[in-house]
Image (cartoon, rainbow, N blue to C red; front, side, top):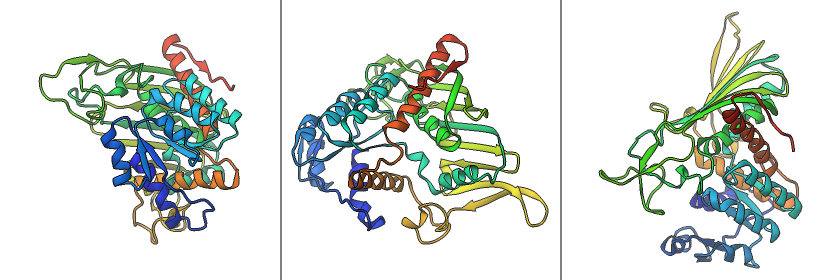
Length: 374
């Protein structure tokens, strides 16, 4: 993700030539010295270090990207806020909801601009769906269904990376994909006010791998020592929005057959929309047809849809995941340039964290739990 942030900064002037701020890559930190040197050799940084504190304390640095594992988010973000350094941080911005809320409060006190890597709200198809919902094209919203399910950890031989440790990751899939899912749900339909949730560890043991030698996509060699998975693989929740609409959200990292099924369906009294990240540039739109029939239209994104023309000239030419990070980099730089906070920042990830906290409480109590608003 550090590589992706670095490339995204450099792509902003090409896609957004009017952007008032231009990033200069000053210094990058990685605790593994060989990797830190690659930031200079491959990514274009002026220098590198093995100490992240040196990045925040550097007088030339005005803004930082936080792309470290979850257990480092709090310390890094608090140091950045205290030092007056704007930050673009990857979700979930902390191991647990209370850490996320602490970071958000510190950023507000520090008066800094922030962007958080909640990138699934940025695809033109998602923004088009949001416009249709907000403009009333679907009528009164009646149903909502969302799945953020992936197979990246479905192999029981998949390595026991930091993501499976409560000390290093905190929550499991509720933080990893749940933060994305909840943010996107609230982006589309507004605040969630109460939830009823359940969670489970479906693969309780995994082969150990030395820290820094792989990722949660890595498969360990045969005969590796096993260790315990300490956080949830799967979770699901009934959710109620402030509008009164109820729906479902399911998240999983161990499902077989869905590589990256990050999908939603929103149904109203006059129409419906459906989207799946695996087909990021397409939106299914249900409504009356000119023939008098009713049915789904398969809409390919094009220059007439929000933000698409920044990346591609014609309908059907696809955007990719990396482009979503360029959108984030632009939002971050513009926020710094004019002092106007864009979304999604710490306020939006804090709202997601409050909802996830209610989900955790519900898994423990077995009851509906209210989402606290402060």
